[in-house]
Length: 187
Ligand code: GLN
Image (cartoon, rainbow, N blue to C red; front, top):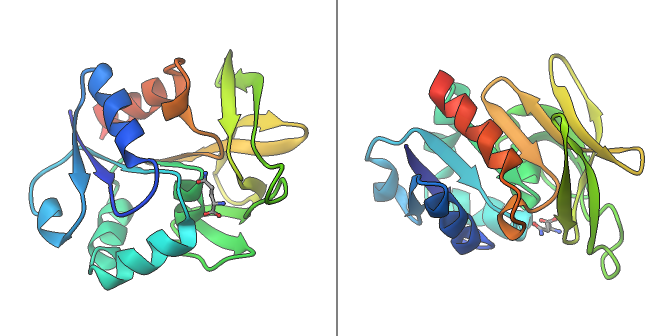
């Protein structure tokens, strides 16, 4: 399984390390020529969605990656990565806009927005680490809710797109990656 991790900003190194531990062949996407090779899945990491949004456009990566997601490439977006996928962004500008959700940026407050909790995710309890995280305010169409915390939606799936408001690359549990790998197997 060859997985491209957007590596223009943010927590890409942690995702690459986690993916490699799980046996995936992960590589960095830094510029247009990095996506001329074949790959089976895409990870959009946490970081600053505004910065990544701008860099994606400046580097010419925006249109080809959007086309790949629309064509069904399995994608996992975490935290800022979830914001990049969202169709509507409260407090920010949409990027790919391929995931039928409304997200609220910095939804837990800017300074005190980092915390850890344990919640159900797709049938098992896992540790979730949130860092100045967004949450999903509402979902549309066939978007499936996979996890909630404090009455707010924090993980969703819609066909080839999986998104979490927390950081699975920073905890030991592999439930989010497991689900992502399943979508790779199907694609
Ligand atoms: N606050 C960031 C944003 O809005 C997301 C934080 C994160 O990815 N850890 O882009």
